[in-house]
Length: 177
Image 1 (cartoon, rainbow, N blue to C red):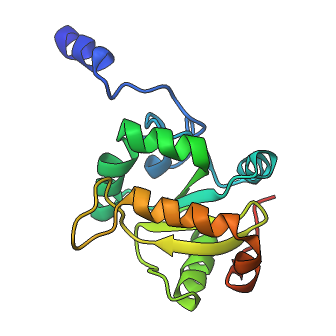
Image 2: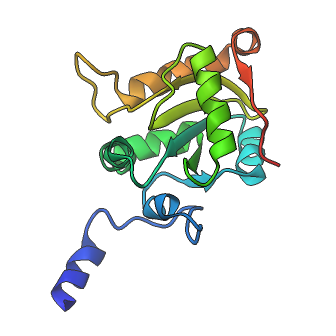
């Protein structure tokens, strides 16, 4: 047991905690040790995004969703991807089962914008709550069948820079207060 503990504490996956520590959700707690600086859904995240003038990366998933677990392991624990997210976005994680009204609103919005609306749900939102781009599962490394997380995030950043386009082609969400 001691050898296992020592191996775990020295492993590269032993990251500093983010804002998800102590949440009442198994899904959010599972991500508390990821290198992404996750926030739970709430005013603090939206205020931080406004302060930094960054878009929000919103990840919706569930503890029972295998694709959500895969994206957590493949994408969000990748140190290079996490650094990219932390530099360009305010990252928010939502438990599908804990906020069903919000999730239903996000899924409807993504469907209206002709974007994937299943799980995991990857959404890009302005600090004032405009959903302007989204996807489903995004692997850390893309291939001929699937766009990489970075490619999708680069596109989201380009769109965010074009505020006039966002105002015309977005869906206003009720933001966390």
